Amino acid sequence: MTDHVGTAAPGCPAANHIGMAALCFAFTNHVGTAALGCRGAGRRLPDLPRRVEAAAQKTPIGAALGKGTISQTAERLPFGAVSGKGTTSQAAERFPFGVVSARARLRRLRKNTTFREIGKGTTSVVPITLFPSSSRAGVSQRGNLLSRVFSQAVRSRLLFLLPLLLSVQVAWSSALGPSKPNSPQSAAPSFNSTRAMQYVREVVAFGPRAIGSANHKKVENYIHSLLKGDLVEDDAFTATTPEGKFPVRNIIAKFPGTRDGIIVIAGHYDTNYPLRKTGYVGANDGGSSTALLLELANQLRGKKRDGYSVWLLWTDGEEAVKEWTATDSLYGTRHLAEKWQNDGTLRKIKAFLLTDMIGDADLNIDRETNSTAWLEDLALQAATSLGYQSHFFARTISEEDDHIPFAHLGVPSADLIDFDYGYGNVFWHTPQDTIDKLSPKSMEIVGSVILETVRLLDERK
Ligand code: 1BN
Ligand code: ZN
Image (cartoon, rainbow, N blue to C red; front, side, top):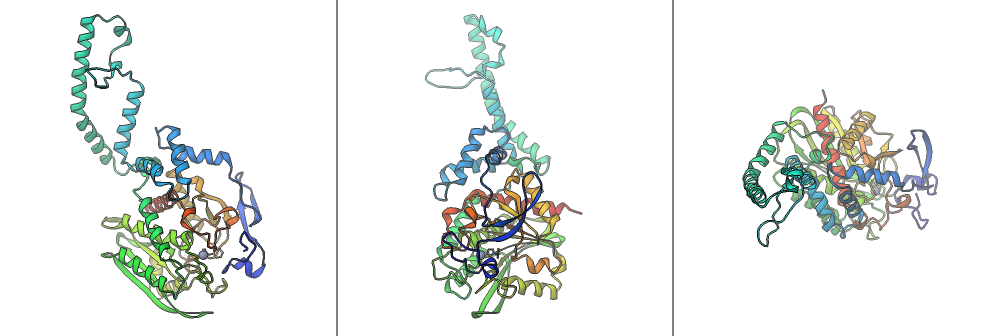
């Protein structure tokens, strides 16, 4: 692979065999016909209908399109400019079903209601649509007074009843069980994207995190510090690489469930080795997955899991040390897959969900040919139920990533990767992989789709 200035991106297999900006991939276009394409030969141009569709999908039911548009714009702004606008829309999305629905009903009530001023200097709202307009037209002063008294009586009763109505609403929705998965407002789990972005910021602040470096050790400690009190295991070993021996450490946080079986959610935390002296921090490539898993840990912690055990896996030594080959890459997962095969863990794994480069503000998760189709389909089902399907699987690529050692041993595996980072993937494996290219919304989309996929896996027979 070559970058935008025409130099080879270190560690890229395409650069090794063909020495030009092309990584061939198969893709399916929007009308469903298969095609062969070459990455770098040209990326799908942003298509307007898709964006409009995305805006519509992201607009909570009952909310005005205007709001959706604002939140969409805010989400896609570079990080730093986001939070003010983004917070509003995200907070709205995160409200529990009952609250949103009560608000929506209030909005509807207001829309169908004429308001008038009563009292001195106050702008109290009295819903006068309670009275037919014909009776209002010719009201006598007495009638007017009566209606005013009646209005005030109704108002005070309504005010008195409001908390009661709200609690009935909340009780009602909890009695119905989990909210309907195809309602974006109700299904959206409380994945905290602001906190996830803060984790990315803290991770990249360590600087390059290539294996064997002091920064790498600091990130290991950082991850451990955020998992205090959790059930954490390390898989530490020494890897032999073309550049010598390096300590490698996979970190696993285990959240036990009641059902027999394990769902692994993984992402790497190391950064590209050849770029270690360029200031390369891998905000998206390594940083986003590290942060996503840390926030997923927050979501899983302290909750009874009525389903499979979920293991969060921060993989190490994913990146090639010299050139990406079968033996110079995936050091951590190759070691762990073998270890889990030997100790019997592997056969308990129901699904291996890998996340990589999922923070890109222009989020396009690729379908990947080495992944297990039914598991990708399940992730798409989860994305669709949350209204996020436009970010998934517009294209199909073929890729070697941390899922490979597990997929090769028969574990159902899916690589959720957006290998389209900047126009023609120009930011990938370059010092331009910085936090300003990321968006909290992308983290939230992937985080909540993963949580929903886990829920769907738990439900499967
Ligand atoms: C992903 C991020 N990868 C490395 N950094 C794996 C990969 C390797 C993806 C080669 C495409 C080609
Ligand atoms: Zn990489």
